[in-house]
Image 1 (tube, helix red, strand yellow):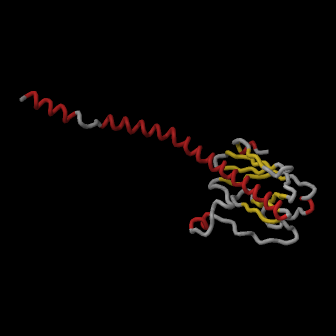
Image 2 (cartoon, helix red, strand yellow):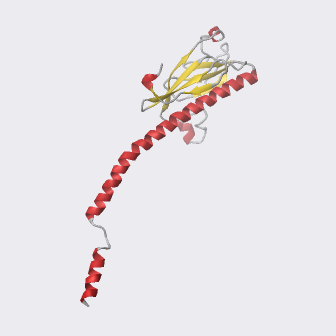
Image 3 (cartoon, helix red, strand yellow):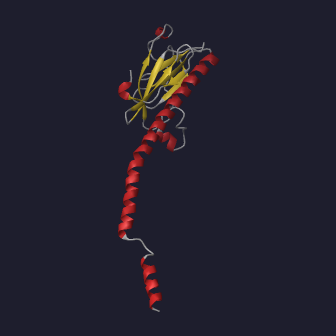
Length: 196
């Protein structure tokens, strides 16, 4: 009988974990979370930046195609330090009202598709380098106040331009527009201090 009682006491003691074992496992989990969280957040920031560059490239392609189809100049408008952009026919003689540009409030209440004309959360237009050409010098005055523009022409060409996008962590991308073809390329990741 004694052996049976000793076995049952021994098995009931080994059925649980000690406080030391639980603290050790918890400590390991905290260390792993501390190592992996910054990497996961960095990956999300990089994804948002690249997705924003894709949107700008898509808007460039839209402006080029619209210009070719309509036979008129079309402009890509954007504001440095902001997230919004839009594509609209360019005519410097007719001032145009600002088109409805989506914002976060419009997306939350369902009145707009936030992905249409706005960069990803945390990404802004950090600057640009738009070179004037003989056709763009005809009109230096913008038809939409407070917005910069890049012109696309009916023959499929465009103003030579570089648009810089940046996020809060100091990382950035350059979207370069090739003037002869009206197509664009995106640079590799860079620091905002490396913007030209």
